[in-house]
Image (cartoon, rainbow, N blue to C red; front, side, top):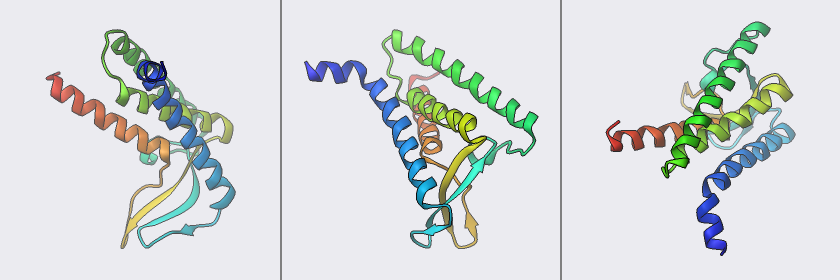
Length: 156
């Protein structure tokens, strides 16, 4: 019976896992990483508030710009949720879509609660530094990758 539950609801479980891990890691970062916490020469943690999208794309301090970007993110999330639902009903796997929607929902919550998305993971190599990100951003990127591979394999 427990195996049937997990097999039937594994997409929901994956989405909740992504959402809560992101929430938990952001809380830890808010509590412990206001100042830069260097883990190694490649990895450090420092809080920043991103008012754009993943990788600070469309970042703005302008309120109207922030509202427009937030509206765009919400619209894309709703559209992808509908697409995922249609695929689920058709019996397709939707792990990539769930990872993107869950990560996006977590970041949308940050936008309303904090006025920007909490980013805190910094990866660097020498003078090169990747834009600061969070677990939800990583989930979104991985989810998009899964979706692209799936569509490539399906020939779409």
